[in-house]
Length: 337
Image (cartoon, rainbow, N blue to C red):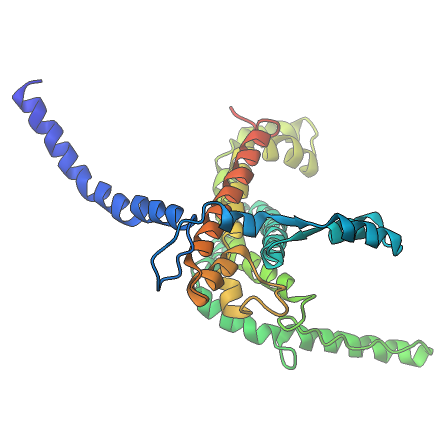
């Protein structure tokens, strides 16, 4: 290698050095340390002791009791009830958090991706003032999560919130019609959006979907505007309707974008933390407890850093497996030009 080539190579590596050091100091080294701590009982106050796979078996493992299984069957319990008596999780709270996280992710995907796609389709028209509507829908994306949470606190207020006020007004309107007809009056449900275990998780899903739709809409809108217009014109000349154009042209050509939005939204939803932390603190009755919030409780509130680190790597494994499944399944429906 000549002297000039060697000098260029050194200068290139020097330019890369700040980025490399930042990656090592803030990413690689902390990841390696957390991976080591996941096999220890570290609690911030004493030196970590190696415990092997104990943390992982505590989170993912079950205790089996054949005698309880037989006793449940003898007492008249169903097979599935007897199974639950036979296999008891070592950490039931972890499985509650896992279930809530999966339900939350599925709910956010359904309530954000589909409406965002339909909004992008509607806002793709070239009408005066359309940019204003696009900007209004995108505003929640740039809004602070704390500010949004305060607004939704008032919306979800059980006594004076907007939702319950509208429901009460609608119920009163129905009663003014039904009561003179002799029908039974409809009771006001007075829903406790954030204080009822039945509604709390759905409330978080609704709030997150509202904050996510704008971003997904912009991505879909960009993909829609990149589709050549002559395809729509040719389909219209051939007699294709709007539904046929959507199903046969728009969706196949936008499938890579749909796949991208699904993957990124899934990864973000499985890491949900801020919303339950600000709105519900995982309650009521653990109905909004997610894996990452449970990790926070174990590691930073109860100082079980070793167990918290193992939960972090379980979350990583869950996201990795789900992403691999999505990539494998994409070959069946994602259209590549």
